[in-house]
Image (cartoon, rainbow, N blue to C red; front, side, top):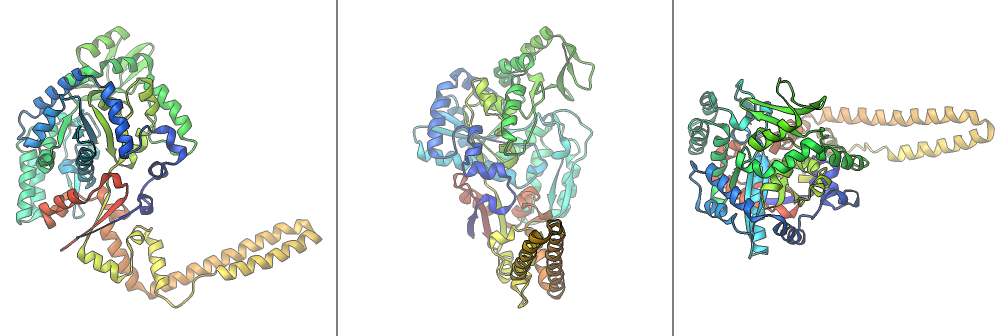
Length: 532
């Protein structure tokens, strides 16, 4: 096994806002609190410890223990849950949707980043306890985003007509999905593990939240991972002051809108707040709460409340109020003794819009850490890369740029017309000077002719490259085929493939290698070459 790293920005798959955050650019400094390094964590620990009430710990532990009642938790997970009662215990949290069979590979990378960071913090701050938490997005209602996973180019999909919060979905129909998936897996030892994992999760558990918790516990329970379902009346009771404030004062809308006005001067805005950033959650329903004519209405329903009625509803049924993408981070930080949120580039981009909101409601803003990203390469693929003289940074070039680069390297013909362009520009500079001295109106015609000639050289260069590509057709096809294998759909494979492909090939060694390899505070993209 060989491990190497490159800066995130060199892959071309990370936004400007994330690149600037990682390099601590001044233009982004206002939008985060403590930076993800040990000095930042020292400050965050002191701040969170001073602000997090011990009564919240008792509610949190009670809720988690209830959720784990039917789960065979490891000793390490049980100890971590109990440790949350102690005021020197803190969490590191990642969140993810309830994707079928974990969905894309980065589900694993998020959780392993979280576990490994807790281990690093334990070494650095031995008098403190650090608990890795996976926050299940059980209240999400976008089923189309989670109802499938990709396996060797095949879309394994679950179809159901259920509506509302996905964590409450029945797992009916997933036995049929397992039948279809099993046909693709074969009957190796690793295949049998995957079939059994799917069966135990989705056939023996009746709810999607329970099935997802089971899988996360099976894969990562040995490392002490704690899985949290926030769709809990007990936990939401802690959040009711912020829900009422949102309904009455539109605090998040005002704070985030103000932040967006500043942020958009340099960066694209990830999410825009609504006037009320809450959903109403009940049975098979999760719809936005809106205000019309001084009445609170549940969008697309006949449900309405007066101001007094909706405040009473919050008190009596806190579980019926579900935060959206703007308020969910606050809910997390209110109920957890959390130090850090670990997420992907898109997630961190919207977290960076929230600091002023947190300041307004006096809740400590957590450290934001970009999760580990990984490119898996087999030994066979590495040999092909070596034979084609493709370096790791070159692998992430746009396909046409990579092909052109290698075609140029593999020919004796010069495609560089820089010298000719420079000569042409010098000639036209003389013509422009003459035009100025004779008839200045002639200058426009000279400029137009210059652009035409330069364009002609560019077109000639493109035609020569096109001809050379045809001449080197075999090389071009090999490059395309290999890059498409490694970057399916010209995207990072972690956003496309499911872990089952690699588990089928490498078994438990795949997970153990990732666990031993990923360094969350290194803040670089990881490339792992697996032996065949």
